[in-house]
Length: 104
View 1 (cartoon, rainbow, N blue to C red):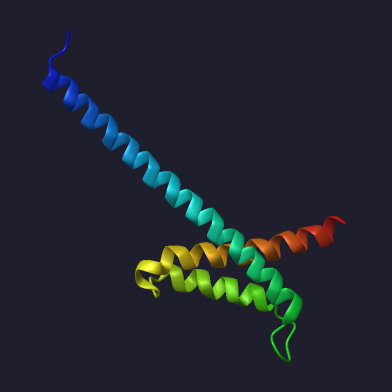
View 2: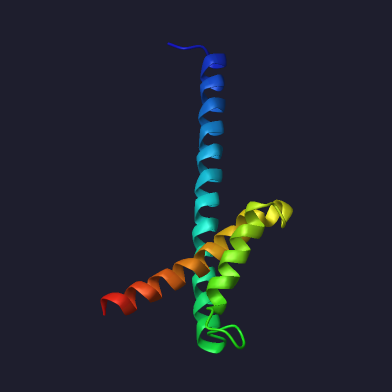
């Protein structure tokens, strides 16, 4: 039989592991939800402002690409990871739209 001190230490280790797993799950969930929002934003831009004025350039594609580049450079400081997820969602919208058109 283990001592009470050993059981307390085991419980502390187990709680620390649960805390770490919960933080990782929250991070993944947040990233997924932000990417989903980015996809919705890409769809909104595509519907309302499909091309940059006087060009044939996708507004959502440019916004997504610039957002990813800015996030990669750390332009948004501690928010760069979140901005990168949103911008990635915008690019995913464009990729999905193009594939649908190609294979439809």
